[in-house]
Amino acid sequence: MKPSNTPSSDRLTTLLYVTATVGAALLAVGAFVAPDRIWSNLLVASYYLVTLSLGALLFIALAYVSGAGWSVAFRRVPEAMASLLPVTGLAVVAVVAVRLKDYAWHPRGPHSGDNFWFKDWWLEPRWILTRAIVCVLLWIVFAKLIVGISRYAGPHSGTRSLTSNVRLSAVFLVVVGLSFSCVSIDWLMALEPMWFSTMWAVYQFSGMVMATLAAIVVLCLMLRQQGVLKGIFTDDHLHDLGKLLLGFSCFWMYIWFSQYMLIWYSNIPEETSWFITRTHGPWLPVFVANIIVNWAVPFLVLLPRPAKRNPGVMMKVAVLILVARWIDLYLVVFPKTVGSTPVFGLWEIAAITCGIGLFGLLFFRQFDSASSVPSSDPYLNESLHHHC
Image (tube, rainbow, N blue to C red; front, side, top):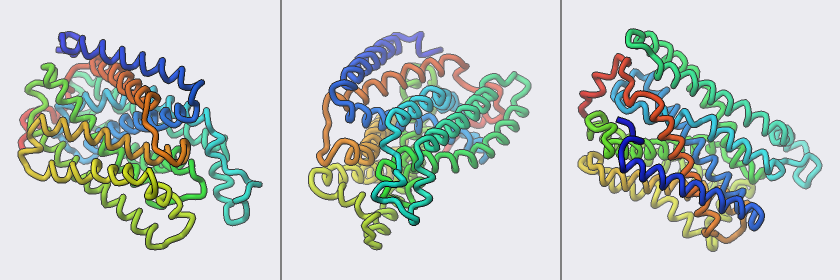
């Protein structure tokens, strides 16, 4: 059964079309009325969505390399998410390309000198754009290969396909580690080129994995409710995803604290400036809320075992984490690009609704283009009878 064949999914598709269309129309108007806010929202939205797609491919690759068979039954969900990399990846490259001047490090500017020779080279606009294109193209190639092999494996080629994807996934893990580190610095940290953190890439990695796991939970529960994954995605699968969510929420907090503590303790102006802006004045409530929704609430709610096996609780926590990821990225981008006061209005709502609508529509289209389960995978039976 496919989502498009159910009445509830027909209503969902219509809703997604409406939200995507209305959001896109408002963004088009806002491009003339409030260009800085629109660009900031597009950067947050495109980076958010590309990390969901990349995180899904990372989830698949880690499962292949580790020999984890428990997630095979619902693997079509992260595969459909990963299949969106051509769209989400090119979208973020386009957004960055529009405002390359915001990233530029000017060799003859007030901060130039021998001490900044590496930044002069690394933040040259054409080099930033080249890195972005190369990294995104690499992600797309690996997504096409890994997802394609899984989807089109014949009934008697499951073992051969599994071996091929294990090898590809091992290479991809090396590539994504290097490439994601580069682009997380280029697209976000370089907005404030004088500021730097040696923990930035792993901080963004933890947020990416948290949001990806949350999105997988939401989509799997939706598909199960529609009947597509009924009897396939079980509470045992949900339990394991809940444990991963709890673990990565704690990991996110550990990295957040490590970054903050080291910068606070060293008290170097080039490092503390980023936090000073976000811990004083109107940004302080957003700063505190970021910690609460990304760690405190998920940690307290998901500690009990029954909570991780409760679809209602897991859906609420997963949605909260998806909201928390937006707040985290909002706190990174907006203080620099928009101003000293937080803003949330029509343009932010338009970007959020457009992003949700487009991602949802493209996801269900990709999910419908293949069988609901990878029937040729040798680990499928193990996954269908998984218990934890």
